[in-house]
Length: 196
Image 1 (cartoon, rainbow, N blue to C red):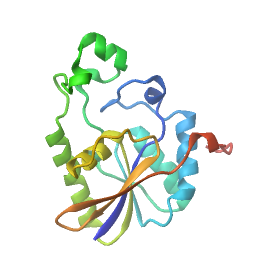
Image 2 (image 1 turned 90 degrees about the vertical axis):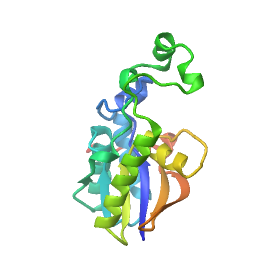
Image 3 (image 1 turned 60 degrees about the vertical axis):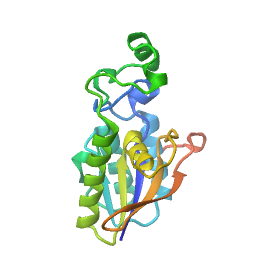
């Protein structure tokens, strides 16, 4: 049995602009780095830190890893965000202009990674992590779409995952069980030392 805390990265430059990111790779904002620094105090004890290769998740993981003294960060490619196809880089308004009604009806553009493919990819990543670090407490820095895919697969309704929000999951070897959601940092409590 392996306990994993799946956590969404800190605020990225495109989060701040309201742009869909998908596999695009914008960096963290100063606020995103502050969020990671402050979240590290609430992580508790973990044995391993894993991360998506996209810099917004990887940099969040590196900041936390440095603060809690657990590392190096293990990169798992299949923890990357869902490919949003032609919507990457667009705002909701731009998507509505180009694909009227798609957002409301759940339709997606060409190149958008489907739910079944995403779930299969993410479960593969979590299976590999559990096999490599069986019995460990693992912090997994990833993306909102990845966490939502795990929740959806468990039959839970969609709910927006905030930056530095997370969800506990337990890998039992042959299945996942989904635990509680949590928020590691509230933006109104942020202060940042000069080294971040």
